[in-house]
Image 1 (cartoon, rainbow over the protein chains, first blue to last red):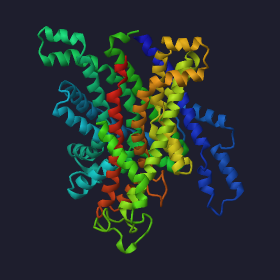
Image 2: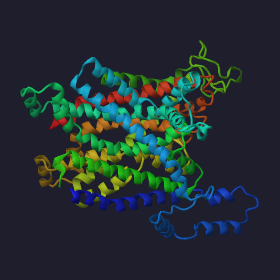
Image 3: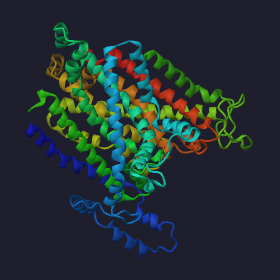
Image 4: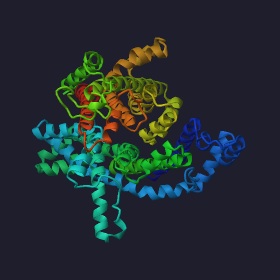
Length: 322
Length: 264
């Protein structure tokens, strides 16, 4: 199993290289940049000033040199400084990362604890009312535009009934609250975004689980278990579920980038101080270092997530022990 | 289930193509005296902040959303199938390279990719279509490649190769028909996804530009008046929802009928 892990780990730097190269490439191809933003409409900006700015940012060097410089700094953990406010990119990301991780972790958790039982029950009671009902609900979640649902929930829960706050992570007086109240405050802010994120993400997983369980149930060894006289719940939970869950782990790896990336939509709507929104704002402001930093970080997280999923896969499926 | 989806889509296509012609109200005509009026017998879905009839704009928007959705999904299916077939059939080197590239691309949150590219190009209907198409072919490519790898060892493929048929011919005439069912499922679901993505982009102002109505931009405009004009948010959203639901139902219906697992 170690060799399997080692092999997967060895691919990481190659992937990372590819990712950074891509981000860098897209950036370079983009028209406009911080120099243009600073000088285009500025009457006082003479050509000399433009030259100096270009030199300052290093834009006059050939692209591979720029990329090389950036990469060498990356390895040391230095992601450069933001063009907007000259703060280290790493610092900006560090500020926002915990919030994003919190949102994603909670979403993922919710998706799992709801989708798996739902899928199992749907499969066991195939074509029953329950099955049809859950299928319908799940479809709704899959098809509904996330930002629309967010807006609707905001109208109902935030504005009309005032149950939940509609933006941010903390109330204005968060720091003055006691520890317990702080926790409640954070939770209240998280409920809507996490709900929308989870509701729209449920569909894929629960369908997958349902189909997996359906397939497993028809297998001979399940029939044997039943013939042995085991109770139905034992049959399902001890024997069927384990095997049905194997592909679920792969799906976990695949949902991760969507969660991390899609998070930016929720973060923008709910004005949530997360990494996704940071990236979005940076893109709009042509703040290259931040964009590259966020992009790399997101891809890195995804890779780590995928590796974790691979590892879990090896643990769960004995056939994979290479 | 597929029938329901098909029904929805049929209605949608009808609306998109014929609707704007039948509409009495002009989606672009402003009537400032009547701005922000709730649904009434004259304006079935109310008016927006410039007095334009919302129903007319929703119908007009259906054209844009549908076009973008279909063409973007078409592009991604084309790319995914083509690349998957090629990589699977050639095997070895080509396959290895393609899979690595795929892995790198898949590591990126798609939305982020799209965002980066669109923010740097002029947002327009064409750009949106291209970008969505170019960033969503990976899943299908992986699927097609897997299937191709299995299929190419079958006797009839060996026979075709033995007969000296050109590679293109084998791929298109012999292999492709066997891949039709997962491709169709992916294509239908892909349209749904593309419509969603386009609306999200338009919502953020990176998609279709005003005054061209797109459901996403309608929602974006509506959110500023959320507390006093609920119809601006509800109706375009409902239209979006119904469309995506229709395509998803159709796709899942296809999948139930044509499940590739049952082929084996």
